[in-house]
Length: 248
Length: 248
Image (cartoon, rainbow over all chains, first blue to last red; front, side):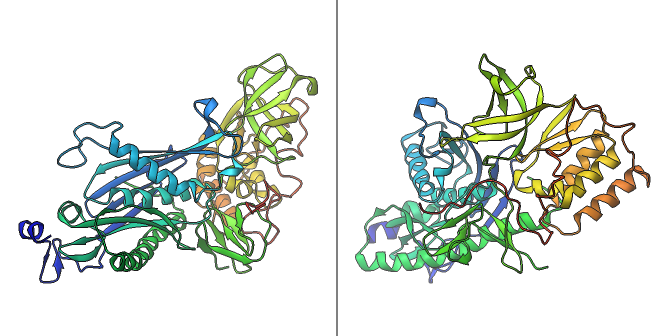
């Protein structure tokens, strides 16, 4: 641990690399209804992340033999643009990483969407990362929840997500890319708003039991802040009613 | 009247409330889609996906002519079906029809009856959650639109709106877009009336000498029965589609 810290100092005088306190979120902004042709859509800017999400359906299931007569299928496609970050994502399209993220995001929403009322259909959730700066999976879950609410797809609950990790030997909320790459540990969490169910838990690196307990508390507080931003975006969209649509 | 926007998962009432677009977990009823709650605790959805119910009036377009009947596009994942044995008229591909939902099975297939062909015109999509507002209290809004644009209009519960080619379509489309944007505001009928008056002048353009409509009776699709009420009205919620998403 000492060696990784000596290379990149992640905490200087109790402040993080971008000047935040340990429990500060990065700047967060959500917009609703950015794709007029989609049934529901949303856009998020979270730190350096820029992610757009479109929701379509329930619509006819393709291929048809995959349809279930008991519930709608939820299909999620997470994709990082080739220009989304500096290295590694030179080509878009399915990769090991994006397949994994599509799966974990889909599973979050399989727990929330009331799919039984739409048999033989599918609901498509398309998530495109335009710019990446660490924590895209949590930002994706956050923006997809807003897009699904905008689409009017019945859900049991709203969900927000945030990553908590260990950087420079200290627990920090909402890791950015540097902290993610050079820190000791990273734990993305998605928590439903009302009943505080954990819908996504992943972990990189090592943490003690005590640290995980603290992380869960920090994540809950962080998710409440994220939820406020989500709720505010939706309320703004439905209150204005004057038809000003989002301008890029 | 004070109205509050609530998100999916927010509590509406203790105990079971049987209203569409709600979710019941055994003790409490929650909103399943984004909506509004007024002073009396009445929940009005702002977005939903149309779910057909027996008795609904729907507008659609014939997309397939088969031996056994006609396939009709209804703004649904699968479309409806008009069995030939139930209808006398011969329909063609692309015909606009207005009909009543006769049967919906477990997997959402729709059988239609009481079919009427609609004359030449145009169909546009309107959010099905806002259809009651487009019809207005005792179809006041529809009446207003007809008077000022000089043509006939048919509104289906599925959110498809048919308008006659005789009407002033640019004006009508503008007015309908305005209703869609301001559906959650009160005093909408007056506002639309003012708007139409400013565009047309004081004299309503009543259609010249009755509409030639192939034996169409007015009670269908025009909400003349007064059962569909607006958001702002004190009357009960439209009887529309479906039960709540409770646990079975």
